[in-house]
Length: 378
Image 1 (spheres, rainbow, N blue to C red):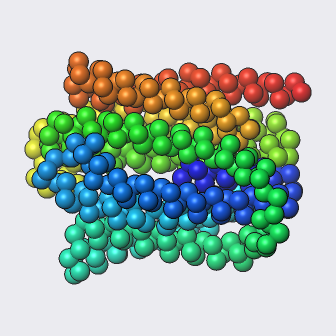
Image 2 (tube, rainbow, N blue to C red; image 1 turned 180 degrees about the vertical axis):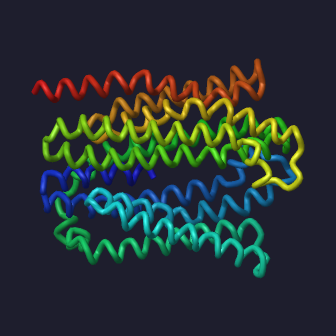
Image 3 (tube, helix red, strand yellow; image 1 turned 90 degrees about the vertical axis):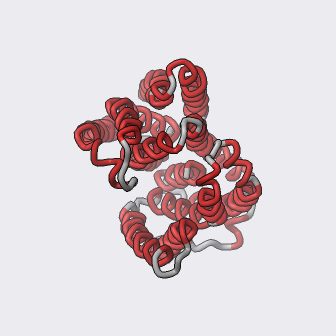
């Protein structure tokens, strides 16, 4: 997601500068790098599937089903990359509606296929994984067809692949830090999940239920980040710095309002979370879920600040600050998970996420304003 999001920034900058040749080369390079990335990632992850489960300390009684689900999802990495690539391209070109429409279609189809594969076909958790991959692939395919119809720059020609070494370098310079920052988040979450797994199946059930709901806020903030990323990239290409400042402020306000509402809903509705995922939950499972949500939800406002400023800085051509912020976030998250969890147990795991957000934001906020003031003076 982060890798192709970085490619979208490059395309958005060329779009803002009205550079059609540059836009075509960006689309060509994005496609080429996405294919290579898919092949490498699929091979590595599928070969390491068993080892990943051992690293995460998955209990023996659920390791078989965990492997069945994870292996299928990893095998379908291409569908995920395909969808994210074409979605980010369309957003960079100014079409945010098509990815939304087909994301809704994908979600509805996913639910239908879940029921079909699990109930009459008896495919178990692997059926749920196949449902996810198939719905993502169809959504990506339909998005591509609409994009080809509406945007001539998506019709690649042989000459678009000529003299692309500089374009490849730029896309890797932008895409790698964004891919890394997404990976850092996942690596930190894997470390947290591994620590929770060591506490037993009841801790796993409560924590997993809580994080499923927590993802609503995480993904919502990521969506705002994508929106401001494309907005800033286009205005950066056009040299409109006042629009960048005003747009970022407006997006931050909207994100803060959404996060405040999300926080209130989760805190007051936290007791409804576990029954959605667990049949006849115990009091211990409910406690694990409630404690995590009560710890993380009040910090959603900070998550919004982190996402908006990180995306804006990235789109202004500064890739090293978000990269450094990712390193800080990873260090803080793993420190809290390993050191604090060893001292205060599950409480330390729950505070790992807010702790990481605080560390990353402490760097991103001052750097953003430094960038804005520096560019406005110029």
